[in-house]
Image (tube, rainbow, N blue to C red; front, side):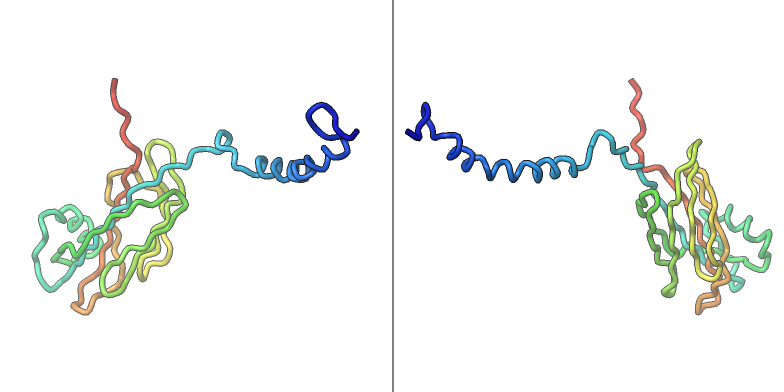
Length: 175
């Protein structure tokens, strides 16, 4: 009598549970390998980077009214530049430790890497503009940081690049 109350003997029953016993270590390993959502820190929100391309010239004296402040500062170091016009602007969201490329003029590009977010609303960036090499600096939010390159276009205009950083975080709502 191989039957014991609604089933088979222990010997035959173990044959039914063998696949389950063999799979238990794999199931346990799969559960342990799953990322732990509770222990993982939330990803740091990135920033919105705006790049304004400005072309300056000694061929004319027209200064776009939006660039008058930049023109005054640039003319302190380069008084021969008398005309300033915006060429293009672009905006991209970049995560912390992320890199993006911005098209400038005539196939030139600017690489921007967000290195880290600092205290007091500041961000550290690494830029690779044409003709200047690598620039690393810390800037505050919502302010343009302009810099002159020595790149000259086919029309003999000097390339000036202005970079602004804005927060991607949603403002906290007041209660």
